[in-house]
Amino acid sequence: MSPNASLARKLAELNLTLPAAPEPKGAYRPLQVSGKMAYASGHLPIRSDGSLITGRLGEDLDVPAGYDAARWAGLGILATLKKTLGSLDGVRQVVKILGVVNCTPDFTQQPAVVNGCSELFAAVFGPDRGIGARSAIGANTLPLGVPVEVEAIFEIE
Amino acid sequence: MSPNASLARKLAELNLTLPAAPEPKGAYRPLQVSGKMAYASGHLPIRSDGSLITGRLGEDLDVPAGYDAARWAGLGILATLKKTLGSLDGVRQVVKILGVVNCTPDFTQQPAVVNGCSELFAAVFGPDRGIGARSAIGANTLPLGVPVEVEAIFEIE
Amino acid sequence: MSPNASLARKLAELNLTLPAAPEPKGAYRPLQVSGKMAYASGHLPIRSDGSLITGRLGEDLDVPAGYDAARWAGLGILATLKKTLGSLDGVRQVVKILGVVNCTPDFTQQPAVVNGCSELFAAVFGPDRGIGARSAIGANTLPLGVPVEVEAIFEIE
Image 1 (cartoon, rainbow over the protein chains, first blue to last red):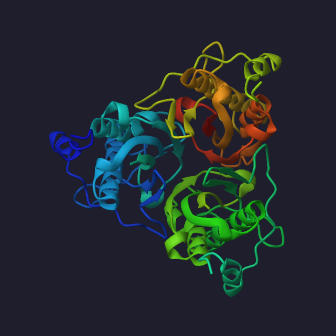
Image 2: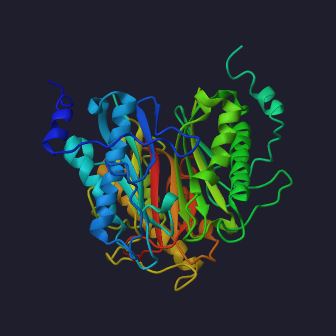
Image 3: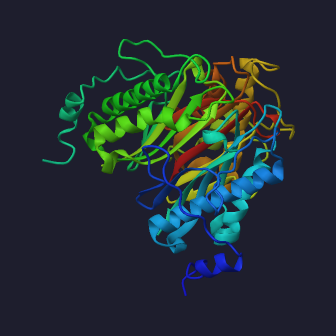
């Protein structure tokens, strides 16, 4: 059994159901493949029921709520990977994540928010393959008023 | 005829004249090539006459003005590609764009602004090769007061 | 002698002592390698004595102080490269830098700040290999209140 053959089972074990893969909000693809690299567009936090999470850290959302939003953005990335590649089994490793947090100027816990996505990827792909490089930064606002947007690069087989 | 041989003609058809390729504003190259990947630095919106577009979305610029600025940033990227690679014909596909929009905290239409660049690339390279992954985010300010900065990754031959 | 064999000597010539490689502030790696590309996570400005530089451009830090902070972030990236790869000698070229500057909305000199990192890399690796593509953007805040965060991509041997 390849190390990836258990990914569908892993999702089930973690009690994770992927949301619908998001539709682009402009002239872009949710995932673009170039050689062995797959670039996931900035994903917004959308719950399984299709509702968009909005709000701003330091204003109307606290760190656990931001963490949860980053996790939903990450689940959206997984859904996009699965839809585009056919399965998550072709993912060799997480290369890099960029998490941008919509927050007030005094908010400085962007890493704790973006962990919601990072820890999801670590759980799904395992720590060896699921933890990559990362940047977490702040922004005064984001598309549609979401609290966090996450883009990612994956190495695929 | 290669699928790229008509790019100069395509620019003419679209009635596009590329601006002068921008000079770096610091210790960097406008385009860096690594293997089959070409990384375009963050480009600012500069018109063909050399004037810089400044302003902030939600304050003194509306979405169509921001779209136009993103288009000029994209034209600058095309000018840089042409200057560095000798021609646009070596571009195999747009891999990813990051568009950063200088805006007020209540502005949430960053994707509509960045479309100005995305739709330019789609028109010039065609939808198959001209549409890649993308992130659009907000920022409270940008270099020299521009409304939008766009960086891009291309796969080249 | 390979062009890289003198990098340790170059650091000594420049009177540079690398700080300790930073520990991750979340579920990520400071450096992730994929093929010939090495992705450095967003690095914060930490001095050799372990103290974190905090502050905001346009508020309590001026451009020279921001430049100095970007240089410390760059030194942290070099420390991470050395720790992870064993030496800086495997770095073939700087591919791209993203510098994010924590600043007030009226601050527009992000490139002058990020030069602190770019000019460090140019000095250490030489202009041919040490200068890559770059984006410099603003942000209303950054993790732990730092004035600048820098991520980088390197081509390695």
